[in-house]
Image 1 (tube, rainbow, N blue to C red):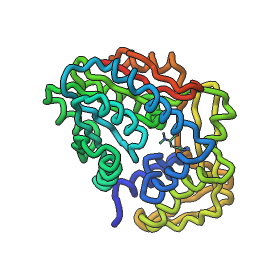
Image 2 (image 1 turned 30 degrees about the vertical axis):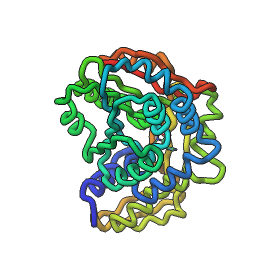
Image 3 (image 1 turned 90 degrees about the horizontal axis):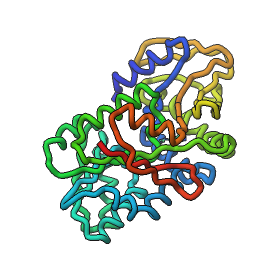
Length: 313
Ligand code: AVI
């Protein structure tokens, strides 16, 4: 079945002066599988760093929550939940009275998450919500139970600054005084370390990007010849931005049936596919302040590559 929003976004992106495809389209079933492979690559440090933070500093994070009685842990886009499970395990061991409320637009993703959680934490109160973040937060806003909101994995780095502010201020509007938000931010570090994480020698990240073209072929009846596109990723240590691109290797035309449109590409023309912004601690603090939050504490891994930053409304 074709998706009209996807088709319209692709048309808009491929007819813009700087061609682009939103990174949210990476995550069809195949792309999500490739992302799992990325997270296992030795070069992709964010996953083990955040795992370390949640495994070793769970107790300190819990102490800072300062919640009395029952509370909710609400997670935006939990993925496989392996990192979150480290924190939930600590809470369970301490006998905390909490419900885990993962929010996702995919009910399939939530069903898979539940299987993994139940296997490891059989007594967990698992109360999934299917929908978009803001409407689900509005539903939760009526409850008097304090909430810890989780936005982990460094996903915030994939948003441009205006989107970051819209997202965080939207979160803030739906939070009660005393509610907390724990957000994963990838930190600026040796540029070579970052470059290797986003341009791996086995070409897994390239396959992740090329899958966008396969997805257009599959779902929108495109005729991209994916051998005629390469992948290029660039880290700018001045502004902390990794920007990734697909590069057209030849002058070529691509027809997308769903849009009944032919798109032209020049040799070496780029399609921008992803922003992955790396932050400094002072940028994180400014971002919190600009959106009405107070930083409670930054929890960093031992290499200081990544932080889960705890904020209060
Ligand atoms: C999901 N997101 C935080 C990943 C990142 O690091 O920006 C997506 C990714 N793109 C390339 N490698 C991983």
